[in-house]
Length: 226
Image (tube, rainbow, N blue to C red; front, side, top):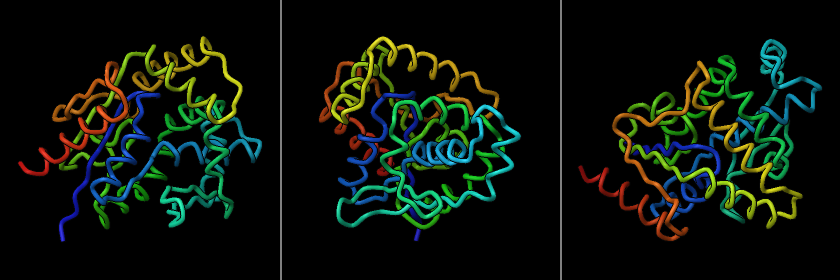
């Protein structure tokens, strides 16, 4: 059986996780949030007292880190486990975002996680989101989408999300962090954020959640039909 892979890339705060998860549910595919995997590595490093910016130190603890992705049938969501503990809530803390960006620029970390991501696509119909899915992780994906929005719109959405989770946040800080994350992700030497040549561009700046979802589902169905 040939499995179908949908790669959704885009900058921080573009709504990739929410939209990819809902699109996967609508089509009956497995949703894979790769950003959550990198966030888990960041949490693992911090818990071991390792600076995420110290590449050599991070590399030295990778083999000691046990990371697992699983789906809870009760909520239907992807859960991340670190050394046997469900850290799905901890990895969503705002301060982890910047550490995850730093961690993801380390070549050995990307190599460490690549097989895990590709194995999921080899054995399931998947919707996988991240920053280099269509260019590096799944370059042969049948459908590639580059999801984006203005920095201002992304900051507004992230700020609201943090508030809804009960986390303290300052809008100007959130906007500054998003702009910095864009710069880091686009200019890193390994697997930088960029739109694949054959990716469909979807800009959600002026779209609400439902309109964005339908734009993605429409692009996927059109791509599969080709």
